[in-house]
Length: 115
Length: 117
Image (cartoon, rainbow over all chains, first blue to last red; front, side, top):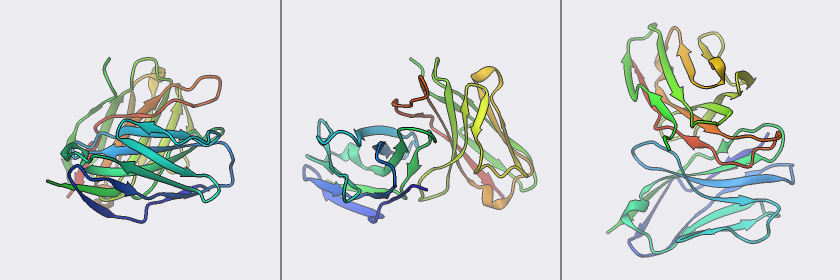
């Protein structure tokens, strides 16, 4: 079974600075997707960024980028120019490209932005 | 376009009482998921539907939990009787799966927070 591990329960960063959230995963599959979801206090999960495992290029969405290391099974999220609205729980998630079509989530990292 | 709609947002009940949660997925989405999220943890899948068929319910505690998705659209998740440990957020999500391949993202509702006293 696939597992996702986020080793940082909490992180904080000064506004306008850069922060990196860590995620590792365990799988025997070669074809899969990785995601970072943001969950603000309103509870609605919002997709931040996704990465297809077959793509070597790291995904980027505006201030958000990932460092995908397939061999190391690592998938970190970098937030540049942090803003107060970035404060939330961030979840790393894995989904197989075939078979079980469910997201497997990590435990989450609570990100605090200091003004 | 309306997102995934869940109700109620909050529910407080006494233990041993029944409770039901409702989910309306995004129009056209054929796959629907119910996730359980305990405080401070990541969501865990309870059940996944493809159209009206429950294709993965291995994590659903079937002695007290039940779910249905009539006509392959709306879904209801029921707990009867509720226990103290059922206090959590119940998230519904939907996605569009085509040709057996799910490359689309999951869209989540705001969740239903259950408190069992």
